Image 1 (tube, helix red, strand yellow):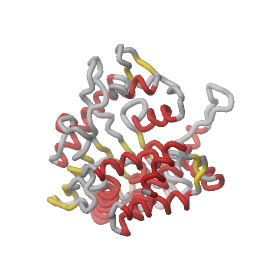
Image 2: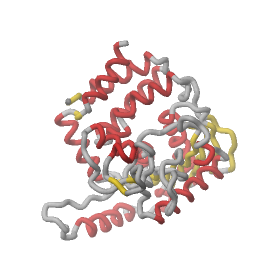
Image 3: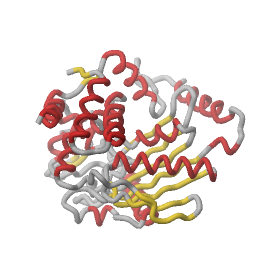
Length: 335
């Protein structure tokens, strides 16, 4: 089914007001969930709303809690999320990292005790819109076996890099599993198999069947052993910089919560390069675009290019939404 962005935003805003968020935060939540869906990331947009409401009902997401600074070390700060909404906390900490970057050239906020930030690329775009480069990452509950192991011990720890660009920001937003679990569930909702193997089934065989992978949440690390190692390193950094929970500690909780995140921003205008930034980006993108595709008709994209095209299409034609997801949202909205 197709839903206009305006209708989606209105329904979500009223839903979040119903669950006692402030007017400002209800608007922020509705905007972020809608914008992610508009960019074609339903797996971390509209599809997450019913689970988000469930976590509010269970007290996992604290409605009245927001991140607060607990320590400062020049251009580096530690914040505590107090188990508030991941979107609200991430927006706040991204803004602070941007402020520090514009004051010092570079800024970092390490956040602990927060919840899922939904689409990490949201905060990469936020930084790029403020003319900052960003490097952002989060740990998660264990949902991938370390390379060579059977049981999940490492997280798929999403990693984001954004670079501001006049013709369209570069935004890399990826989980360290071959497919994020939200994306795997997206394929499940559509009744489709993954295009590539994405994790292990109950027989310890690699599979592209969403149901088989989701049964035990054993995702396949990107780059096999390399993704496994990168996952561990990002978990270590998020944990020691925030003095928060590691994937090991998150595993002791029934539900993924009280996770750790890092927000690093760089303000490239301190270099006073007079347009060199844009020139160098165009050289790289043009060189990458100018390659013969393996399959005729295939298109080569830079990170963030395809979501920009999807956004333009959805603004023109409205947003495709899984009907069962929208029915769940409307049931919560009308209850």
